[in-house]
Length: 259
Image (cartoon, rainbow, N blue to C red; front, top):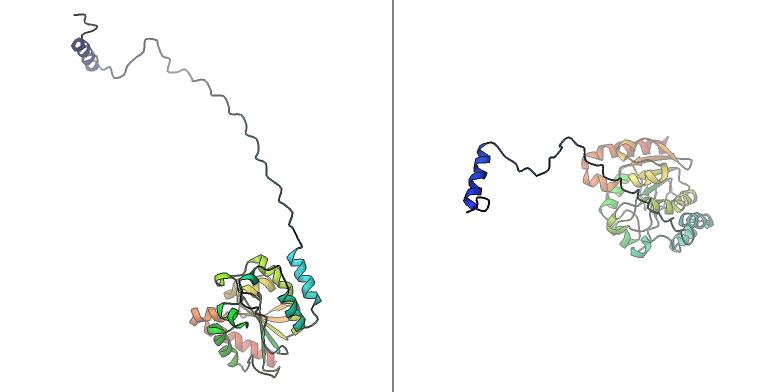
């Protein structure tokens, strides 16, 4: 039988080559392993993606509309009416009630809170429920009460937003910017001697700063009036050890009123 076609002969030849150290097959043509491969052609540059220009906003600017509406209000009743008729804030669609204010508009002290929660949305008043009860106890301790008919011992209370955000989330910056003209006009019309900024949101909206732990207890100014940042009562319910700082702020407020 021809050895070229004999299986056993071919297998013996292969075993003999392995024993001699052959560990890879070689082709019939010599291979230059030092030759560099031909460079692959560079890919054609991709065209830059086209970015569509933003479509122009349809309709009026809600912030401009808010400024115009707030400027039209000559008193607190007309300001409330302007807010009730303001169509550009989507929060109103999910809210039960407009939360405008509570207390005595002639009060020397005006409190500006953050936004209505569930209890406030149902009642149509700011600071009710557990946080409201905490606020009442805090200010009762220095002789101030939202139910007082006497301006010397009364409180007047409002919020940055008049409608409850979904799930009690924080107000967004566009929402605050939209409502800010109404808040500023509210302060102008009520004309308090002192403004209390209750929590981070009013501090961000009215003095452009956040960080209530750092800001609290330090007097600042809002629309030409002394303003005092303080912890929000809801925060104090979660962090009762901070009541000591809140008490110090209340004493500072009382001293300012008496001095």
